[in-house]
Amino acid sequence: MLVLIADNFEQTGIDSLKAAGCEVVYRPDLKDDGLTRAIRDVAADVLVVRGTAVTAHMLEAGALSLVVRAGAGFNTIDVPAASKRGIYVSNCPGKNAIAVAELVFALMLALDRRIVDNVVDLRSGRWNKKEYSEARGLYGRTLGLLGYGNIAQEVAKRAHAFGMPIIVWSRRFASGRASVEENAVPIRFVKTPQEVAAASDVLSVHLALTADTRGLVSASVLDRLKPGSYFINTARGEVVDYAALEKAARERSIRVALDVYAAEPSGATGEFKEPIVALPNVYGTHHIGGSTEQAQEAIAAETVRIVTTYKNTGKVLNVVNLAKKTPATHMLIVRHYDRPGVLAHVFDHLRRGNINVQETENVVFEGAQAAVARINLDGAPTDALLKTIQGGNGDILDLHLVTI
Image 1 (cartoon, rainbow, N blue to C red):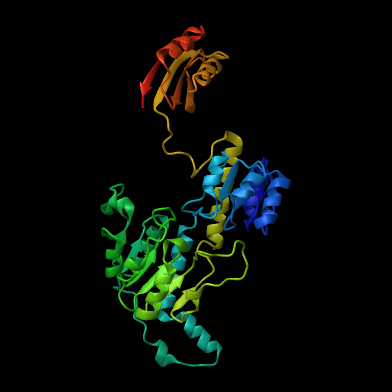
Image 2 (image 1 turned 135 degrees about the vertical axis):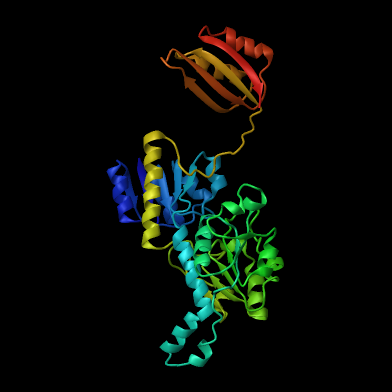
């Protein structure tokens, strides 16, 4: 199996892939047309990326069967295009959670103590203890979290240690999929993002980018922030209306810290223009939330686990683009002798009946003399077709159809 790594990646991960029998092509500077050509020319089976964009054109250029995002978010990969071509997309959720949580607190403390401005003034030869002795402090300040996945939970643990009350809005609590009482630290759940913003001294965003969350942190949320409060986004730039955030920063003295942006360079370096980061009360970092040695080692190990499992078993761990529900309406259950040609016979007649197989499973009984096939279909075969299938092969013991 040939693995093309088109981003920075730990040497330990490369060595582990090679030890597992993979051929590895490591070209971390690839992007855009260069990556498209490499996918075609190298004939890779697997592509590994971190922040590099993977477009539909790239996916069409070669014979990829798996794209691994060496990180949690996968919004830089054209997942619908991959799905159309039957290419698995996988990620490494939770492996950088501690690293991002640490950056959240670095930014929070920097905002409160104005660390960046302190450093700039000292480097310019200015001493201004009077100006910088007016920090508010974090103890007793309310931290609001939008989203409560792996990263937000790590942030909450640290906030609790700092003595900060924590309030949360998350769909997992709103839907009943999780209970506030089961949480490792005390939190209070509220029903809307607007309620979180209104009650927070510090608001931190931890939402995955989906169709539902794109632009969710809009003016209706940001306008509820208290004047002078702090806002932090280490999730995805697209979930926040940065024009509305810039307005809040200008007009109501909101202190802002950002690690993510809607229009980031496609590679590790490049020209960058984002108006909001030019404001004096806005601190920006270079999408480095998960970029610690500890996190990258953990992500590399998980990437290796995904690729080697795929190589050895054909199964894909952490896959993000399999259908949660197929168009199947009926299941055909076929008990049969475990002999060649039985399922080929069944599938051939289903094809003639213009019925598509959505999913299939064939389970063999002990002794390997008989088996049962469960075949999900997008329509119901006629009684005549079922009789033809059963009567046309003597190795079929029984079949019946159920509605699903």
